[in-house]
Length: 311
Image (cartoon, rainbow, N blue to C red; front, side, top):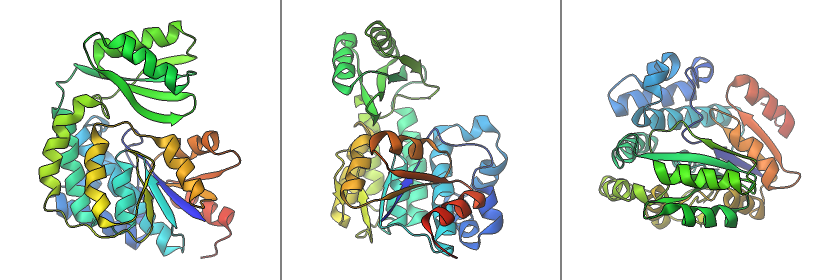
């Protein structure tokens, strides 16, 4: 059983999706729909940059969504479709689009606003995120509690057993990072991000997004979509909006997501869109799992061969 995994912010790169745009009618149509929905040339920004502009959260989020959904469209043309799906943070929107729960044009507008709201929630320079490697989750949670000292620092992403991302006020994150290093963490690295995502400081963004989502139509997904917030499965339209809203200020429980996909029957995990981070994490989370990535037509050809699909 094939599960599609969709990347989040941080996987972007100038030029992503261009090869699919040039070779796949379905992918090209997705980029054109994004341009129309947003009212500017997102395709040109994605393909040509500049990198500094693409890295702005309000641009990154719709660009990664578009590149991911375009890649999925190219996969469908070749007969590769998922039975299950999940996405990391922003990638959950890609999963819901491919599952038919959200219309693409609505999703690309929403994630642009989501990016704006998340960036505006905390003044630039006030927040930070750091990746902590080599410590188990309970140890990271404990050092966050100790480092807070009246500020916010909390677990933001649980990516694998030994890789956790923390987020919050910059000073508190730096204190937590220092504690992690002192207590045997293999590595602790501040991340080059513009805001502290997936922590309580994002609550104002969730409030604004709720108003934007009110008018967005949703449908029952045609395939099961595993959620970031709790590792549960969205099977009905009623679950779509509440969990997207909770997601903004809650940790991404990616380890739980991948394990749940395996429990639901996934035997092959295909990362669709820019980057190869998720397919690499799969092999750390589920022993013996097959992980592969599809960023471009060559990756698609390789995946089809590995999965035994002729198209």
